[in-house]
Length: 247
Image 1 (cartoon, rainbow, N blue to C red):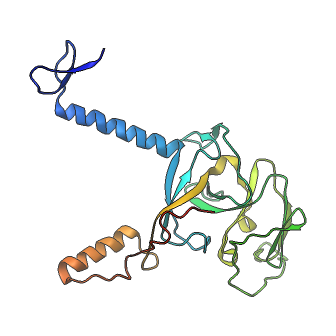
Image 2 (cartoon, helix red, strand yellow; image 1 turned 90 degrees about the vertical axis):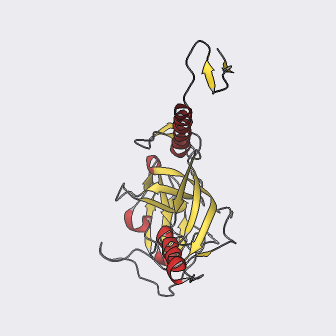
Image 3 (tube, rainbow, N blue to C red; image 1 turned 60 degrees about the vertical axis):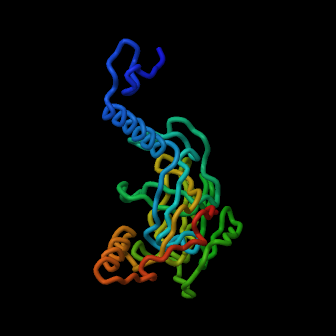
């Protein structure tokens, strides 16, 4: 049965029922909006921010991005296990995943090895199934080459493997190859740990290292109110990065 406007003009009511109070109408609208937002976040799109430089220059500290959670399957919002498969990661994807060594943390890296691939790093160069993998986005800031590790305590940064990626697992590396803590150090990422594919940078700013955006903003508001000053370097927007598609 449809809604119709009451003759008193005081609001909408169900036929034969009492008029809804304005608080009830606002409350219902708020609950619906909240449920819709939670559904979108759980199954479709989620926002993340970049706190480290392991993906430079593709992603910078202070970038805020949207991740397509539908890319790698509709998942349980509680366990992250795939309910309905919608796709699998492709080599070169930049993806967010649950960090294998600490499930409370999310990491973002580039997919390098797919299930069944043989991955090897020789003097910084990455080989997949015996062939050199060209990744234009990868950078090497340190000219030093660390020799192959002879014990578990030595770094596998520049010489690693070969290893074969197990079924339903993936090998990830950061684009900032000399400054990335990735699969070379802690192993593979399972399909159930993936959260989604990075899509677009919706906001980006640059300020003091390690200072969150809200603290930097509040600090500048305080300076403006009490000292009539504003430091443009403390809260500088990167306009050229806003709206940039992630590749």
